[in-house]
Image (cartoon, rainbow, N blue to C red; front, side, top):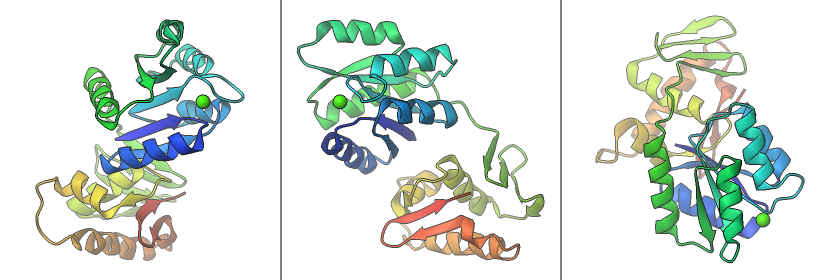
Length: 222
Ligand code: CA
């Protein structure tokens, strides 16, 4: 699940990022309203967490303009404890729910789960990452027009990386998504599959698309 977090307070942003990553969300942080709006409109997220007080464009404006642009991403707005009118304004602007700061991890997680239940994420049929095209229906991968043959599990690993293109995913996140949380085999399995995919990419000089971030995980880049 991909979360867009639009929050200018670096400390809060980092705290929320860490707690969501522990819950296996892939988190993209935008530090002001312009950056957040650009991310919302150019990329796909399963849910967005939007602070109200933001530089450049406040959270109300981000929500209103995103809805006006047809963006359906569920939005959770962060409001201050004493600002009741902000909650109403946030919902009027197009937010789906609000959360009062400061909040505890359990509450944030519960609200996100509720939002994700309410609006199932649309299933993407195709991912385009630079010249890399992943057709999920046809289960095919093409890079610069050249087809690459992948085994079913390799394809699922790549699909998950493509759904989170540009974001580093940990081995555990990949393991949970592709093999399921009940998997109790060797955790090396992720490395094995990533190397297998990379070998196939290397054959067409595209191995650099699948980046290893030492000590953290992997990401797919254009
Ligand atoms: Ca703020």
